[in-house]
Image (tube, rainbow, N blue to C red):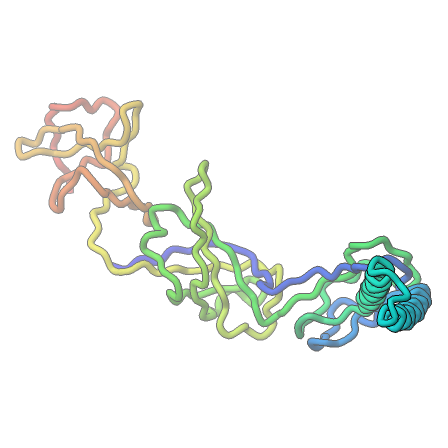
Length: 299
């Protein structure tokens, strides 16, 4: 039979980016606020660039001067009027000047920050007029069309799941009763060593109207149809030797049977090893029960 397993999680945007400045300076423009939509390539922040422009103009003039100087040195070299060292030094000076100009052009470009994708502003952390060091977190953008949730699944259930398996998702903030379609998008390869739980990422397709990052949701997984041996959960016993049950043999005698359990399914638990279909299991009256004791079965 196939079984449904419900796991809870929180919606979040898979595509999220934090915007940082790569150049220090004063913020002169920051036109977008939380909830505003931005298009890919829109200018979302600008820093004061007056000083860098001045430095770039100086670097351009220096490059032009070095280019003229090299041309003059090459003319003198043809007449053997300068040494090879002087000619090489002139070429190096031009290369250094060109590199300085290129670096300043790059730094100047960092004073304009553009949206890397179409999305929404989820956080605005600075204001125009703020003077910022490099690598300050300015704002965060999210793509609301990439909502996913991460759920924790036991190592016993993980082998029964695969990528692109369909799931259903209920979102408490949208009423909690309606089922929305989703699919397993990613199964993380590493389990938590303490809990033996693995992480499964579920994506919503399509994104429901009104769904937002941060909402609580419940994901229902359906495992493949399998033949399972299950017993009432209270029939499973444990002691320092491990898991066991009391099985009733043909002479109505209680026999201790070592077992290995699997998934818990509501008020029953799967037995992976130690029982066969049709075995009779004692489910009550364990207080004075001993192996070999005669038991009167009650349906």
